[in-house]
Length: 304
Image (tube, rainbow, N blue to C red):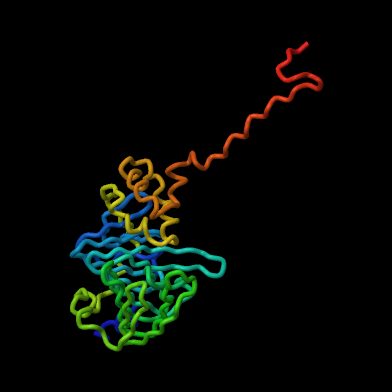
C-alpha cells in the first residue's frame, strides 16, 4: 500500500493547475453535493471548485479532487469537507477542512507557480501544507484518526481553553488518534480496525485526470434547497468557520423554517443575532429634551 501512495505523491506534480478556482472533481463514483453560496449543486466530474465550496459525498460514494497546488484529495463515503482560502497580512492560505468522514490527502512540494499548499484542518488540529500522504478519519463518536503513509507531518493540536496549540511530530508509519478534550496518542503502525474500514479506493493508484477537463466548461445541475438540519454541523462549528458562513447564508434567514431553527439554536451561533433581530442593534432615539421656562416665569404660568 505504501508503494501505491508514494507513486501518487510522485506523480502529483505533473497535474496541470486549474485555470481558476481551487481545483476540480476529476473522479466521481456515486452521488455528491456541492454547497455553493446559498444553494447547492449536484456534483459532476470536471466541475471546478470555488472558494468556500462544501463537498458532501453520499454513503456509497468515492470522489477524487485534484487541487490547485497539484495535490490530490480523495474523499470516502459520507464525507464532508470545505475548501477555503484567505489572504492574511503575512501570506495567503488555502486549506481543506474535514468535518467528518474519510479523506486521503497526497500533498507535494510547494511550487510558487501553483500558489500556497493546502493545510489539512479539523476541529482537533491543523496540519500545515507539507509533502506527505496521510489518511484521516473523523467521526463524532470516535474523534479523529490519522495514518501517515509517506513523509513527515507536524500536527498543531488544539487545546481546550488555550490559544497555544501543542506540536506533535509524526513520521511515515505513525498512527495518531485523538478524541478531545484528551490529548492525542501516537503509535507505530496502522491500527487493524482503521485499515479494515478504510475505503478500498484509497488503496489503489488512481489516474490523474485534470488535463482532460482543462478546456471543458462543465455545468452542474441545481440540487434542492438545503435546510438548517443539512448544515447544522457547519453552523455550530468553531467561530472561524461560522462567521464566513453567516455572510454566505444570511439570505436563508428569510426562509421561515430556516429562521425558526436559527432562533431555536441561537446559543450555538450567537453571531446570527444581529441578522435575526436587527431592531435590537439600531441606534436608540435621543431622549426628548425637557422644555426650558423663560427667565422669571413660573412653571405652568401663561405667557403674557
